[in-house]
Length: 261
Ligand code: HEM
Image (cartoon, rainbow, N blue to C red):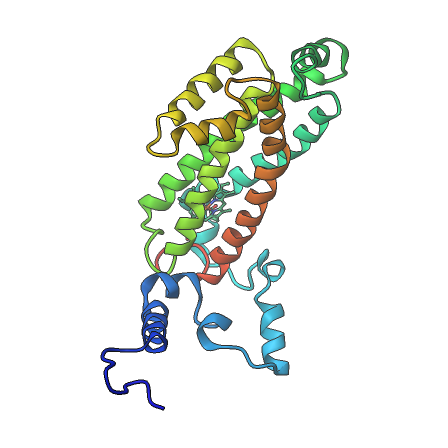
C-alpha cells in the first residue's frame, strides 16, 4: 500500500523524518561539527582504507602537526596563551594531587588540614600557593586566549565548532575555580559560596532545585563541601581533559592556527 492512500493528505511521518534529516545534514551547525571526511558526513563502509582513516584521525596523531605555518609559530601571533592555559592546567593537576595527600573534605578536618599544611608539611605552603596562583592565572590566561582568538577572527568558519568547544572550556575553568574556592572552609569561602548559590536560587523556574542540588542540603554544610570536593578533584578535571583533547585535535583538523592562508 502506498502512503498517500484515500483520506490521507500531506507527508507521512517517515517522509518528515527524512526531510528533517536532510535539513539537519545540510545545516551549518552539522557541517561545522563534522568535518568533510567524517563518517557522519560520508557514511562508513568497512574497508582497509576506512579503517586506516579512523586511526589517522585519532587525536594522538595530531599532537604534533605534519606541517606548521610560519606565522603560527611566531609567539607574537598567539602569545602562546592557549599553550600557557594548558601548562597551568598541568601544574594545577600536579600541585592538586600533592594537596590531596593532606586534605580531608569534612567540616571538622578541612580548615585544620590547611593549617597543618602551612606549618607542618615540607613545602606545604609553597605548593598550596602555587595551586592558588596558578588557578587565578589560568582564568586570566584562558580569558586572554579567547580575546586573542576573537581579535584574529579565528571564531569564523571553519573554526566555529572549536570556538564553541572553547566556550565550554572557559565555563569548566570557571567552575573548577569556583568549586576549589570552597575547600579551605574559611569565612571567605563560606560566604562566597553562600552568595553564589543564593544568586543561582533566583534562576527562573528551577532556581530552588538548582540551589538544593548545588548545596546538597537546604543550607551550606559538610554535604556541600563533600559535593564540591568531588566535583573539583574528579568530575570537572575529567570532563575538561576530554574537551581539551577535542579542542587540540580540532586546531589541527581546521587547518592549524588561523592566519593569512
Ligand atoms: C582550558 C582552556 C583552553 C585551552 C587549554 C586552550 C588551548 C588552545 C591551544 C593550545 C590553541 C593553539 C593556539 C594558541 O595557543 O592560541 C588553541 C586555539 C584555539 N582556541 Fe583555545 N584553549 C582554551 C580555551 C579556549 C576558549 C575559551 C576559546 C574561545 C571561546 C578558545 C578557542 C580557540 C580557537 C578558535 C582556537 C584556534 C585559534 C586559531 O586558529 O587562531 N579556546 N586553544
